Image (cartoon, rainbow, N blue to C red; front, side):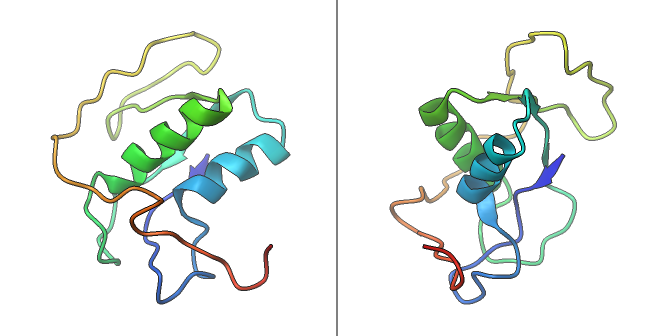
Length: 105
């Protein structure tokens, strides 16, 4: 389980953000990524943006993502398709709103 939300360009080192979360998942050699998101509103990004950006980054890197509803049980070994349960709202891509941690290349 990796935190993917509550990020911002003004504070790039507080949370790693969606794209770095996918990268971290790969670095620890995870099989199935279970993003942690949608619990608090501490940042200016849209509520669904972290998951949308994770799904975009995961697709590029061939990472399997589980996206259960809050409180829903999941089995990570079951290859279940992602069924977005969140509303469709506008969100910014990594290109539109990039995050650059100050201590990383």
